Image 1: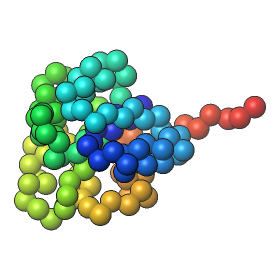
Image 2: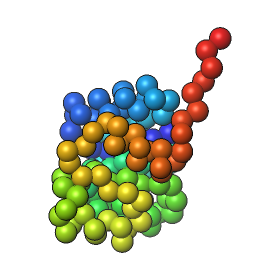
Image 3: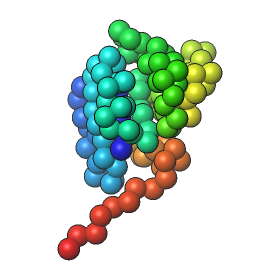
Image 4: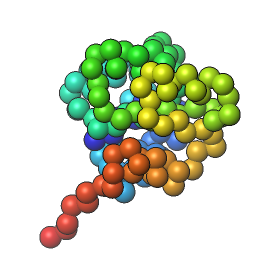
Length: 124
């Protein structure tokens, strides 16, 4: 299970559909405040979070997750991978940072590196 946390409505839905089609179940939220509850309920292997969320911030969410003992993988979505702020999340237990522009194939590669290939169900 992947938890996707971002405020970009249309692109987030597109990412979720793409990952689901590749065999990765996705929970999607646009509210950072919902993350602790969703992590407890869904126990995701991977959380993909937008660094620039507000109330709480993406950095705040990362710190809260690690403080609460979340040990799964985390990928951060950032504006540009060349900004100095992108390096900050690695100190908060982030596994990968993806800059913009983000292609779906780049996202898929990052997910596969983080949690491995999906296990697709065989159709009867």
